Amino acid sequence: MQVYLPIAEMSVDALLLLGIGLGVGFLSGLFGVGGGFLLTPLLILIGIPSAVAVGSGANQTLGASVSGLLAQWRRGNVDVRMGMVLLAGGFAGSVVGVQLFAWLRRAGQVDLAVSIFYVVVLGTVGALMVRESVGAILDRRRARPARLHEHLWIHGLPFKVRFRRSRLYISVLPPFGIGFAIGVLSAVMGVGGGFMLVPAMIYLLGMPTSVVIGTSLFQVVFVTANVTFLQAVQVGSVDIVLTLLLLAGGVAGAQFGAAMGTKLRGEETRALLGALVLSVAGALLWDMLRVPEQLFVIGPAR
Amino acid sequence: MRGWARGAARLLVLLALSMPGAAAAQAPPSLAAELSVRRVEVTTAFAGGEILVFGATERLIGPGGDQVVVLASGPPGSLVVRQKVEAMGFWINGPAARFNGVPSFWALAATSPVEELLAPPDRAELRLGLDVLPVVHLGARGTQFRDALTTLKQEAGLWVDQVRPIEVTGGRLFHARLPLPSTVQTGSYPVQVLLIRQGRVVARQELSLQVQRVGTAAQIADIAQDQPVLYGLVCILLAALAGWLGSVLFRRG
Figure 1 (cartoon, each protein chain N blue to C red):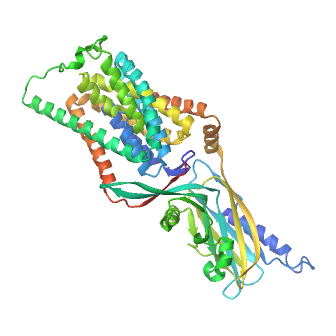
Figure 2 (figure 1 turned 45 degrees about the vertical axis):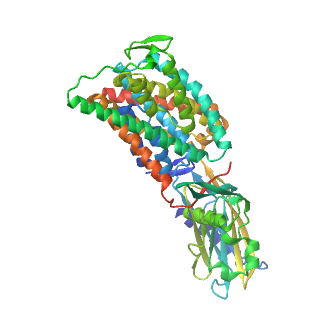
């Protein structure tokens, strides 16, 4: 069934969009990531103009994250205090990130910079997660006692606050700094940043995996709302018809994902997310290295 | 098809009026052409369409006789064509050429290949051919950019160069079908119908087609353009609402 998208100015198969929404929504609910790092490349792949893919992708991620967040909220897996600290850092970071993006654009080669950012960040995050979680699964098999979390230099900083849901008593500086760094990266890469936030909360802050997912979704909801608004006002590239079609599949997928997530152990979830992130990095790297099918591309004149 | 039938009826009336018996002193027109629809409506179910041009000539159409050429074009705009180049094993965006005044849509059809009907200078003057389109080329030089523009536009179905000839019925009635892909821009589409006899244009008719968004698609596009702040907020609220609705529905289920 063909549907015409008024902002993208083209028609696409509605069932294809529902399917993409379902798949990405499932991952979103399972891992607590927005799924923007998967959705935006997929939309570009089916021929949606890239500006519309970024703007509508953020808007879809917002809806899917609200759905996932509510599912996690009912299970008591959201640390609001931690989310607020991350969010404050995230907003500060995204302001800096937008400036960095503008600077990269002026210097030319913004596409290359974004691609390299993607490959390096996704590759590093994915590899670390797979290594750690496979190690944890092997340790479990050998029945070694696992520590609750490691004590690093990060835990010795001032301004300590008690994060009850996360069972942590740490300084606000590390979460603020993580939020800031991810805000910068997500502004440059045009994604919510959940796939970076989840491992950062687990490995750098030592939060339990169950709380991490809900808290990450909390942060993603606000970041994507901000991106949607800025894209709609400054670029005019948010296609609400595209968003709602993706969401129809996405909200269902997110619920299945969240239900599935409760059946998996933390380290298994982490291993799967790591493998997913790593394979996206691999696909993007391959895309940069192989000989392109079209040596020329048409783009809008700026 | 209904539009075609209605248009044909209108044309018959037109022809009947121009018959020698009907209007004694008037010479019959050498060319009469019409569009099956004057307006293509882009709704939320729009999946492309076609421009159907039909008409009749006074004399017989065929080799040695009259020939008909139809040219349709869409609103012009600017485009950038980028070449990908290899640097240290990576394929990156290399030199770019900017083109101004590029027709967003362009379709040509004729009863015989246009190259055989007109001498090159006449063909260039009438802009009947992708090779003689007057586009302004800025930035990186080289014919490969212009060639790439033509190839990519043709692959997207937005530039159509004599893919299907004009069909002739009974020697004097003709009709041309020009495909409109779903990616066409909205706006005014001038359609020219030319009658060519012995290498010269002896009659021409200028028609116009409007491609317009209507209904929900039009309202969404208008609000997004005129009220971007409101539109952004509505998008956020709708997405959040859809998310909430999904979570409520699935909790019950």
